[in-house]
Amino acid sequence: MSTATEIATKALKRINVIGAGETPAAPDLADSIDALNAMIASWEADGLSGDTLPLDKRFEQGIIALLAVRLAEDFGKSPGPVLMRDAANGWAALQGAFFAVPQSTFDRSLRVTTSIASGYLLGRSSLPVPVWRANKSYSLRETVSNGFNIYECTTAGMSASSGGPSGTGDSITDGTVVWVWRRVDGTRNDYLITVN
Image 1 (cartoon, rainbow, N blue to C red):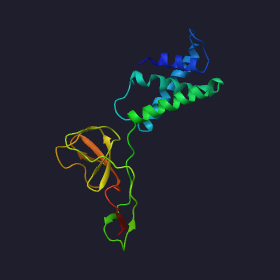
Image 2 (cartoon, rainbow, N blue to C red; image 1 turned 90 degrees about the vertical axis):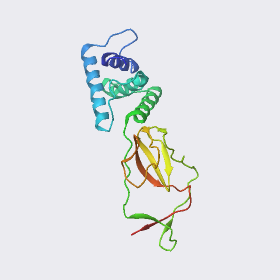
Image 3 (tube, rainbow, N blue to C red; image 1 turned 120 degrees about the horizontal axis):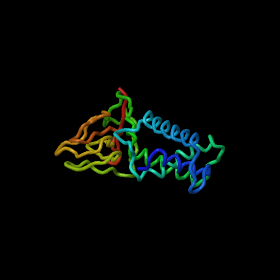
């Protein structure tokens, strides 16, 4: 990955503060590097997970675009639609690669039942979720069904040799994979939820 100076210089070029082959003034460069560091610190505060810095080269253009959008107002510039698109794509790539999956929250008083008289019918989903498999490599945010539940991968890894995720927790260990419970699997059947 490029240095902070190179990223800041490229971001200033994207908003036409400097032209091709020009070097930014020292104060402008210092302000831009400070903005880059503040931007990265804010990502960490928002949940940037893991040992991610320095970032891979594949994220560089997105970071440059994000920094350029961040700097535009400071330099009296308006980011154009291409720059805004590049920044949005860069942000999506960073979120997909590094941000922790939000943990599910649910009312623990809900339970699955077969009693129509006391329950509320849940509709079927039109998109089936793959069934959990033993000794399989799972990626971050991949979903599986196991039993009557759907789980989302929060830590990538290899599933256990048997069993799979179970229960309705938010940190379910399965081999080296960690899952979060998301919902009842509506593709398996129609289910009812009742409140105790």
